Image (cartoon, rainbow, N blue to C red; front, side):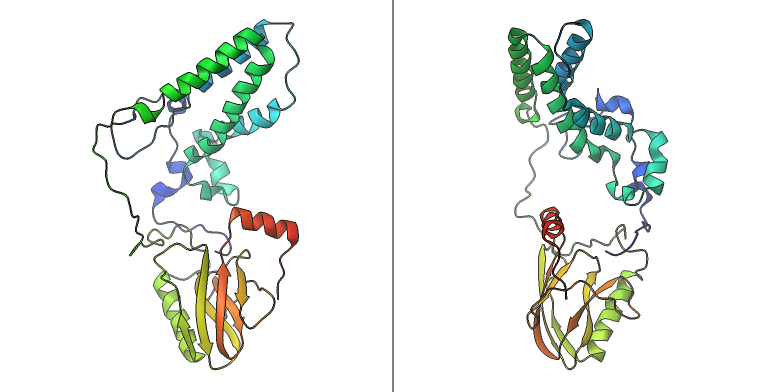
Length: 293
């Protein structure tokens, strides 16, 4: 997807419609394990919070303990910032910071808050508690975490079959949440792409668009060379390999079809492999540089 996305028909999917009471992150009684097949608790783990509280209390009450570990700001600051972003008054952050809208649900930041607090709790306990108490507190917290997990809660609702998962017929643009701002309506894009194939004398064998792909392969046979649109929105992170070229290329602009990924092709048959952006791929590209045509 190229450019900024601001179009979203479903307002409830925007971050500032998804704030939850801050209390729920510490004591959430509106959802409990085993009582519904859908939903999710927001409550931070009580064993972790208790261990963290003991560590902080020991640090405050004991004047002779060792210095705080140097690593604690790297854990505490991200957790605190992400916790603050659960509050309604942080709405301007999601409105005005580029890319923040893609968080979509502020409580997704629990994926950062939870591991940071777990590491901080054990770090504090390891540094400020006496050896005997440290072992007891950490062992008790571990046992509480395991015993109190949802794995041991009897299911009230019956299990539902989820295998094999199928995305057949799924419409990932149903709410038009993540389309480029410059993109025309999806139906218009499809018609324009097919029309351009026809005008260029191209026969295109494309993967099933209803499935999710990490890499897509197209078989394209064109009567003449040129820029051919692919049924993909463009991003600068797509890596495109054409069988008849030695080097990879990025998405090219397609005249009169904004935001669509184009590929430069010679006349005749070509195999086109498009690798989608992944976290590992982005790190690799940053480390090695992208070899582009």
